[in-house]
Image (cartoon, rainbow, N blue to C red; front, side, top):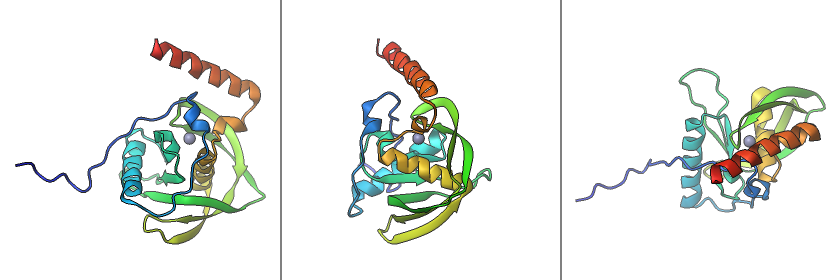
Length: 180
Ligand code: ZN
């Protein structure tokens, strides 16, 4: 007799890597929170923690839905999972801050990006309830980085064209080498 599969079963999904054109797609609003969306969110956390990373957008696992998972907790062994469904920035501060950003779709590449220091974000939680938070610091940077993904924008779009072309060229070469 087969044992019932555990409800909490989660899967690490493969990450979409630069220069895959999927990363340039605009993601669709989620609408109602179906069991597929709940599974997607669980898998995204599993994939993000495994990487490890502090944020992930659904498009990075090849799903063009407006779903973002984030955990910016700094304390070792403490998890603070946050999910943002159909997130939208409703306010950004005038003050900017520079952060050395990286991306699970552009492994081991980091560059300084300037973004608003604080943002207010409207979104829905996993139960479909409307939420709004004001974020600062790493969380603010991370939310903006992930919402960019939902619009097909990568953090390298915020750096100089010279640096961007260089990193795209490097990843294009690596992809060709891996495909060979
Ligand atoms: Zn990213």
